[in-house]
Image 1 (cartoon, helix red, strand yellow):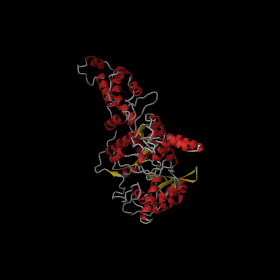
Image 2 (spheres, helix red, strand yellow):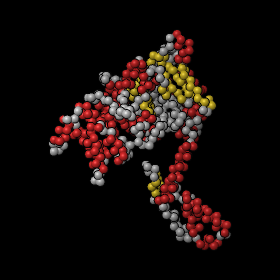
Image 3 (cartoon, one colour):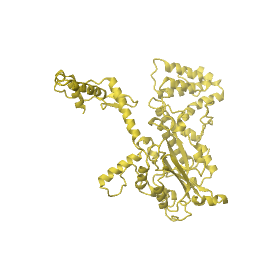
Image 4 (cartoon, rainbow, N blue to C red):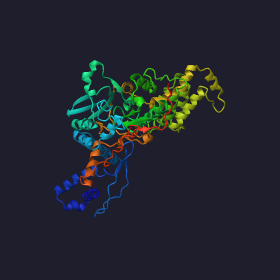
Length: 532
């Protein structure tokens, strides 16, 4: 097709052809040439990370019989072609059906891990309580969000099922757009209407859960994303949150069975499944959540009021987060905090008022024509200047003037300056919990392995040891899974099991001897609990 277009151009350029064709045919060819000039090079470019276009070297089309050569690609045409192709790709992506009742029904019937989910939430590895109305599974609340007609959502709470097969049948019948999992109650939740007035109906167990969402980071996301929009740059903040919470839950509270899941859109969920966690009271849950929570300050007061000296948990979090802050927040490949002048001017402006001499000195130095320091070098230099300013280190010549100034610095100001790097790192990287999700046993949370209706993505487990490699944009989508099933059907001739035929990898084993499934990471040696 590419060569044919160039042949058309050559034919129009040929005087002999013009002389042999009728006037009407000549006008037709001229119109075709104009169209070809506009679209000739659409396939001959590749997009860079910034959305621009880089022309690709291609073999010139063979000269036609008249000896004409291929038309040169100008930068303007390459950019126009790049824009058209990008728009076409976005339109194609937008037109793809990411979620539909028909696709969802097939997913529930063919791929949803019913047995794995129900065996996990039964916490009954021996099966001794299976099928009884007093089992943990029979007293577990399930909630469905269904949509009988487009735009008409119905929220059904307090469902319970004696047998796992009953849940499977209900999912198949209702085809819920969303499944939420609640607490284990004193009685089957389906009987709550007859029991609530008697005071005998209440929660008894529930996994300790945490919900972290990128929308809570909108004030510090400088990648261009906000609300539900995410990118690879801001997703790093979720990676940081998982690392901090994972260590705190295991090392400070001794929990062993912790599962992390992608929410399907813009966040992560943690499920702590130890029996000691499941039986925590609402007050104890609030205390655990508060242990991890720090104040991010207000518009009027940016200070976090961190303890001094820093709590050991926060000190450990800083050690985990600062290297990622340097790699993923400071440079232009991250959020450009020290990569652009307007950004580092704002950062220097956030220093405590007592450190204004440091801000002025560095602003002058970094604005100089000879400064070519990297964002990482600027951060190290800023910390060194602050350390010298408060007297924790000296300059090469002994820094007598700085030492004298440090002695006259009020203790309150010295502490604020010393903690400023920690507060800055935390403001961009520390986990921002939706604390209300964690505080109450009766709070619902989206079921793992659901399909998010806005993105069509599966709420897949996140392997903590490989959390740095987790890519939310590589998570399988509902249309993708259905295409893979169709392909599998063609290859297998319509027979055999569909297990292993799609991108979603569900462990085939159900539960271990401890009653938790294999996707819930288990620590081998619980640590002693350290309370604040």
